[in-house]
Amino acid sequence: MHTDERDLKAFGRELRRLRVEAELTQQALARRISQRGTTISDSHLSDVENGRAMARPWLRKFLDEVLESDGRLDKLWEELTGSGHQVWLHEVIKRTHDADAILEYQPLVFPSYLQTEQYAHALIRYGSPWLSSKEVAALAKERCERADRMAQAEAPSLWLIIDQSVLARRYGSPEIQRAQLTRVADLVNSERLTVQMIPTNSPRHAGNSGPRRIITTADEPEVVYMESAEEGRIITDSAGIFRSRLLFTSLQGAARDPQETLEAIHDEMRKIDDE
Image (tube, rainbow, N blue to C red; front, side):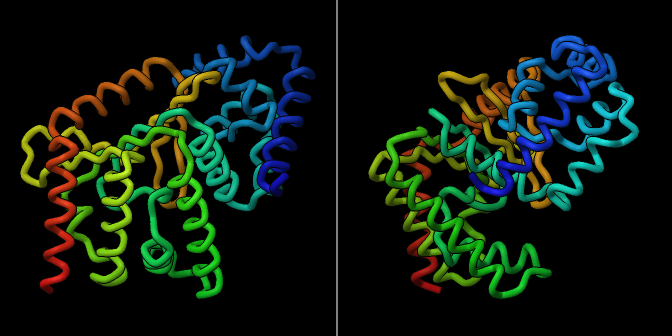
C-alpha cells in the first residue's frame, strides 16, 4: 500500500471516530453539511471514511464545524500530507485507471495518461520551477510509465476533447510536441482513443469553465474531477454530474469529428517537420 493510501485511511478512521462520538449517522452528517450550501452524498462520506476518497479543503472545514472538533481534521490532514497534494494526485490516478470510461476536456495540454516522458518532463519542469531536476525526472518517468500502462490496457475507454491550441503548442521543443502528437495519432489509429478538436474560432465554445474529467465505473457512482496544477475538486452530486455531462455534450457538438481531428493532428505534424 502506498503512503498516500495509508494517509487516506488514517484520516478516514479519525473522521469515523469523531462522527460516532457526535452520535451522527453518515446520512445525518451529509445532510448537515449540505445545509451549509454545498451538497454532498452520504456515499461520498463513506468513501472518505474508508480511504477511497479525499476530503477537499471545504469539506474538511465543514466537517470540523459540524463535528465541533476544533479544527482537528484539518490539522490531521496537514500532519499526514503536508499540502495534501500527493493524496489528491493518488485519488485522481487510481480512479482514472480503474474506470470503465473517461470523458475529458482539456484546453491546454494532453492529459497525463497520454503523455510521453519528454512532454511530461517539459510540463513539470516549467510548470513547477521549484522542483529539482532529479524530482522532475522522477515524476516524468512515473507519469510516462502510467501512460504506457494505459495505452496497453483495454479499459477504460477514452474520449478526449481538446482545444485546437493544444496541437499548436510547443512544450519543451517542436520535436517533443511532434513525438507527443505521434503518440496520440497512434492511439487513435489503434482505436484505443477517440479525440475531437474544438477550433479556436468556434463561436459555440462551452469550455470556458476549465478542464474536467468525467469518470465512469460500472460498480461505483460516477464522479467528475475539475483539476488545476495545485488542487482538484471532486463532484459527486447528481446535479453537478448532470451539468458536466451537459457541458461535455455541448463541447462534442462544437468540436470537429474524430476523423477531421486526426487529419488536423497529421497537419500539425507536417507543419513541425517544415519548421
